[in-house]
Length: 299
Image (cartoon, rainbow, N blue to C red; front, side, top):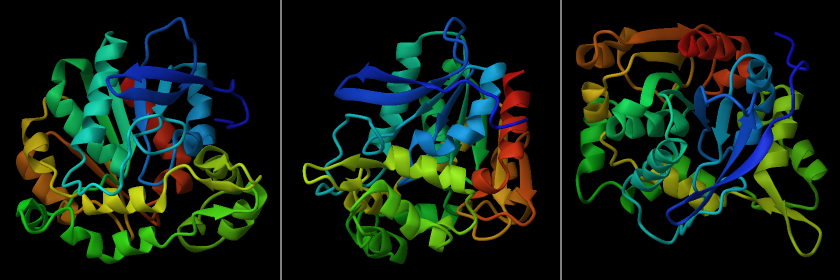
């Protein structure tokens, strides 16, 4: 598919219990939503615009800004010690209830994939299937350790990835300066320029002094990395909907055992695909796989 041949998404603000969730609405507004897509920690819905956009010719996709990200207006107090992603999961559950329509495909990348699992556990009748791209799933042993009362939350703020997120530069003189600083570096090394430009467009907000600052604060990004007491394995065991999981070959955040052994023991009908040559940022590296997977699931 040609990523240039699609209509621009519509920005929606969807009222939830304690604020508004922002979403990009791709496709024909007259048809029910086919796919709800959730982004990775620190990212935003706009990041995936050129990846999801071509699907708007045949599907309706709602790409959401999770709590503390993008243009959503939901409480995100990073000073609180959060043990889990229950708040973000509950936002997604409320969204499914607000849509109140035929079951949808829940899809997501990284954090968004994990939260989709947790939401499907609470609203199985609203979920047609799950399509996940390198979701954050700790190994069963690490997941158990995270549940221990002295581990998740405050103590996990000391893990390297959380400490690194907390030290991110929070702002730049302009969006152009942010793009230049990220291009070809670190986590953004394998990203196409179009995707990086969309990430910057959706991930920064202007300040009163004419500069830009991250919509997802470094402290909130770190808080998400530290909040690992999630019942992901229990949710997977109870999952009723079909599951397709696309895992990175290198640096995966998905600790499901060799060949998906830990997952397949709990959900034997799951489909696990390892994408050669990909990193945790596989949607940016293989947008064709993302599109084909969502089309198959929606059909």
